[in-house]
Length: 245
Image: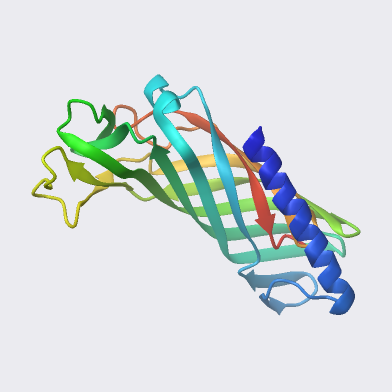
């Protein structure tokens, strides 16, 4: 709840700043490029978003030992719009997402080969210190949405199909004797083949004022293949910039 209040506060402050800027420079928005007629248009870089994942039905170890940053960053690449009337449109987009899952400083992501990753304790592992343990997932997403404007407010509802690349685990720390394991480089170890579910989907909604708003996303599918990583569903709440008309 605390993270949600912080995100909403950021959105409201940003909206106020955007409104004040509009008084000095009418029509100022995120830079975008659009081609087409009044009915069809193609736009690029129309929005970006960042949010916090809240896990549902997560494996207990993951729920217990996850760190403070379970984060999503999202950027629109391109959007095709069909606008049958002045205040509403249908959109088909292409987005790129980055999702980060961190653990606390007493546990770390342990690659086990063959695309599998588990959560291991620092105690008894031969490690002296954990500086960072992060697992990241990169996703190419195709959102389909309905958008409706109400004055300076706009509402977006839709569903997203996702293609997930293999996940990457990154660990940085030192061994108990102060040295490093041979496969580490400068105290850092990577594994780049964690098996995700190749295709997933989610449902989303966003409410914006001018070009700043909040969004909600529910993913009913676990990111990782069964038996290769923690199983969980997630609800994401965050701030989105650039969904205005």
